Image: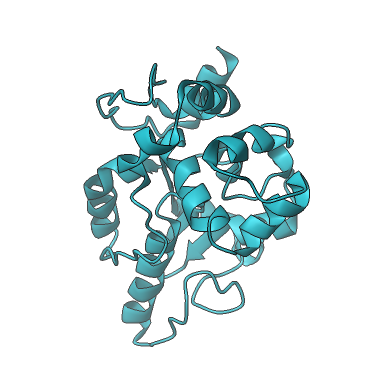
Length: 242
């Protein structure tokens, strides 16, 4: 489990007061799109124009969760979005490791050098303790603060129409942000081999179990899209216990 402290909570949860929504951030799973959508929806509700970038923690309409009354949090809708672990990790590599970025520099510092390729990246990453990883590479169940958080809705990057419909039901118009898009889902066969696939399957086994993504038997396999993620905390807890 990820350790809960005020800094972790502040960086992970976005409470949009006018929308009565709490978004549990999950990097490399449409995170920027979701935050931008919530921010602009709050601006429209308030009649303001404050958007300056989705990841500015010191700006925007969101309220630090520790300052929100417990009753308001209990009444709010809590949601997150998850992604196929194979595509998510490749996207993180293409977006954060290939170019020079802070998460990429974090990895280089921990691994001792820049990776030669995706296979080298995965091999080095597998020797870093999951709980200490940068959130772009860390398992999703840790990013979304399992098992501390209950969700009213868990969407999938592979079914953003469902995410859009959920947000629309809460008065939020989806504002697509593609700056960090890599098209990773279509590039799996170019970067994965059998050994890398097996390593990623093992490394993110909890995400596969909790969020229902199928384990691939080969990089060329294209499994069918899994159904909606059951959003009840009790279901996820029972899955974790086996």
